[in-house]
Amino acid sequence: MNAKRLFRQVHYWLSVAVFIPAAIMFVAGGFLMLKKEIEWIQPGTERGVVEGTIPTISYDQMVEAARAHPEAGIEEWTDIDRIDLRVDRGIAKLRANSGWEVQVDTSTAEVLKVAYRRSDTIEAIHDGSWFADWIKLYVFLPVGVILIIMWGTGGYLFVLPYLAKSKKKRAKREASQKTV
Image 1 (cartoon, rainbow, N blue to C red):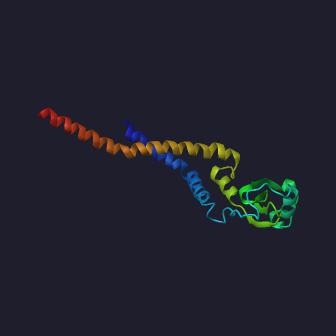
Image 2: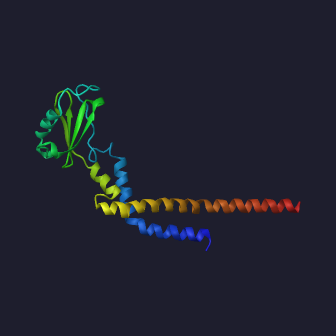
Image 3: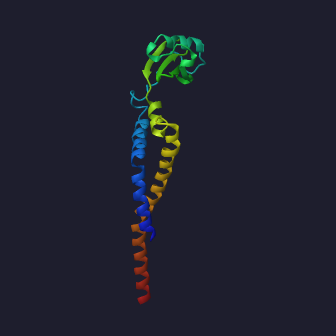
């Protein structure tokens, strides 16, 4: 079996094997690329009253401000997944375990925005962990490796006609030089 036929067969059958997981990865990846442009995916970052300074309010004051918004589901510290402090914008993003995000001004403790954050869920779908940890490791990771192999075989198949054309020109040139 020649390389061209082997690569074509490998490329063909691997594409069948990765079709559904790769489609999920591509669609979710497309959404992630747009997360800063589409408010529905990830809430835009507001600006506080004073930007570029160390917060003048405590973390407890931030949590207290977030409690005023029941949709976020923040009642105590354990309800918070993380706090993203944006000193350059004068805000803190309190990301709740519920998926909601509360943006608090770090100088006034005023809540500037409360919105549902879908980008984390979309990222989990993209890497496969949303389905199950074993799917992430034993389906989506191998699909990524297979896509790299397909990229290589597809690149080879793309370049092959150009290599063949170049080889024919070279052979023709050499034949014409021998007859002279």
